[in-house]
Length: 170
Image (tube, rainbow, N blue to C red):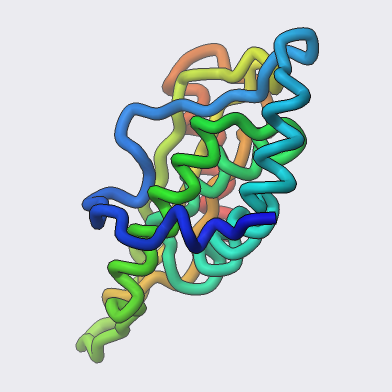
């Protein structure tokens, strides 16, 4: 079996952690190309590249959380499009490996939280959208997350409030 390292080597350095505008969704079971999925799983080591990216996103690359969410939802039946997005993210991580997380001494440390939610529900996931948040203190990220929102929202505002609730719990 080949390794994803060969696909990453020599690639152009992307400026974004995930390909802009790409939306990955599970395929309907009757539309899955089983042979292609098996080839990507075995020959391209899709699970290995996803595991590597997931570890890095959980530990230091908070900007990769949403992309990881998309990549891991494809683990049962990956497509070449998903694999190429994983290679894109791996190239981004390699190029930015020395940046790291930094905290700075501030006079009055306060928590600052940013959150967002999509209004694009995935048909294969029961129309649940994705939400995420990040909590900063002393100019450094403390906690970050990107997950499916637990309930189907009636509007974008509803999804935003559900994500605000999740961020507040953190």
